[in-house]
Length: 433
Ligand SMILES: *Cc1c(COP(=O)(O)O)cnc(C)c1O
Image 1 (tube, rainbow, N blue to C red):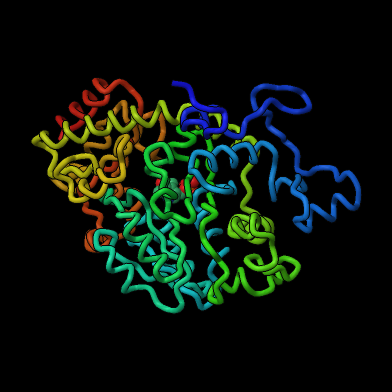
Image 2 (cartoon, helix red, strand yellow):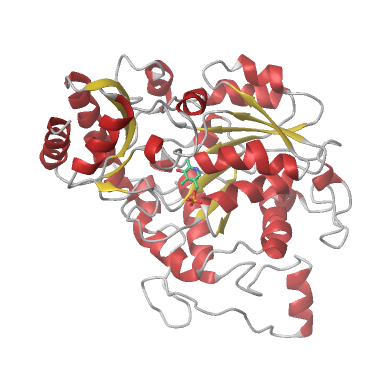
């Protein structure tokens, strides 16, 4: 059965085409890299209209670029959102999201099981800027409700969090946020829009680190934020949207714009206030790398998930593995929740404990040969990290345990190699401890 031309393209078609169209000037089929800092104005009126948001167009690559715009349109389609803004890293996407919404004296409520850099940002950098984070337990959604107060401006979760890969009950947490008139911001990096479209479950803003599975080849750093276009910012507590913005001609983003633009007030303010004035823009070359990666996202993610499940099952039975966490293992503590949301696989991350603790963990990592020992995830190549001896080595064993990290924990990002070679490498490395 064919589909009518009016129907939206399927995911795979959007991954391949998305915002890509033959270049209007050269008719190039692949999206060109527009390696230019700035764009010529047609007239002074054109220039004035661009700056006043009366007309959309290119001004300066820090604010936007045609190559980057193709990436933004593509991710908007894949996430089922209304508008996206790409930036220099996933980390910059998260920081700029928070400061687009929250101001000095405001608070945010966040799950505590976060990517390491995000945890540091929320736990110690934002408080220095006068934005306090209250942490909640993703395994108990009622703790989010308890942490919300009059000063809260957003609720933040990751789909699959660190370090134990606990899965968040997104729609329940979204309902709590919405009951209190707050937007839900979801970091969907570990699932990507292929495995889960979080907007369909109540996310108002989605953050993705492009560096990981969307790019998929470990070649560039980037991040992107997608505005679902669903959240109504016209409430007194969102001063950044309802009071005259001294950073942008005194505009009241949720009040003065026509409805079709007020709908994407978050994306517009994100681009024109923090991105424009703090400068974490994505290089057009990197946008182009991410477009190449996204074209095969729908082919890569099923294999990442299939290989990761096979690794989790292998480790589960292995006498040298003390424990294994993978949201797709049927006896995993968050399997029940995860399986309600994830119908196409449970992602590419597996964590496990090596019997013998920290020393055994170090030995295991050194014995791996197909796996690369490095601090990244979401590459086509399999990767391994022993956080206790690397990213978290400045903490004592006791502090590590407090942050949910046991000294024996090994983090695996399962790649696209043949599963027999992945398992053989794990087997020979486990045999050496
Ligand atoms: C990597 C990562 C980030 C940070 O992204 P960068 O592109 O490295 O800045 C944020 N969240 C998650 C879940 C990540 O894996």
